[in-house]
Image (tube, rainbow, N blue to C red; front, side, top):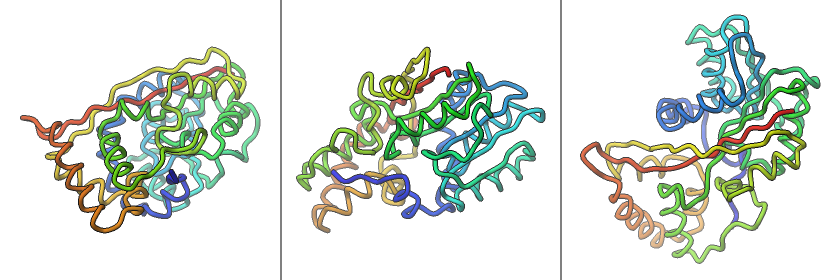
Length: 277
């Protein structure tokens, strides 16, 4: 199954869309991001590198935590996304944030130059995640920590799992090949720890953290999926028009199981990996 690389996500998504969706992502991933910052030992005065920072939600949370004596560098290879991050930092009055366009697998930064490195929801999309982690380890100081968030296994994330099962069945689409970048590439048991170990980290651990996606209804969930770039939209593009409409109808029907008195609430799970240099 051909899935979206991070570069393809950026070509399909505009920075405006990402900016508009910031509040929703904060609702879904905010608590997990705080735990990532805890595990990375981000504290007042820390120098933090945020790799593949996108529009900077995790950057801003780190900047608020490190305070005026600290510093956060947000890197990404999308200048438009970093522009959104820089503007968000300006609006929040955060003067301790810098942005730089940079390839995550070839960080143009000095060795041992950061107290902590973080990376949220991107490592599984890297062409070579072990190389990316090796670069993060290179630039963090001795005994510093590198913490990342990735999606857990597909079956732990039914919001996407239902979609993948239906579209793959209707389109007769094979599953991803081992090692192929996609949303759930590092979700299998032991996969994230293995990447950390290959990159040379010590004291490696992975922590499962529940998430919940809240929307007014299943119909709103469908509208959100239709308007976003993801592996879902890439799969949908491979269906003919008739099968695509069948898929959307079946997906909405199955997603209704998550509707209740409080609207649409779909459970999910992410993994937070952490290792010490």
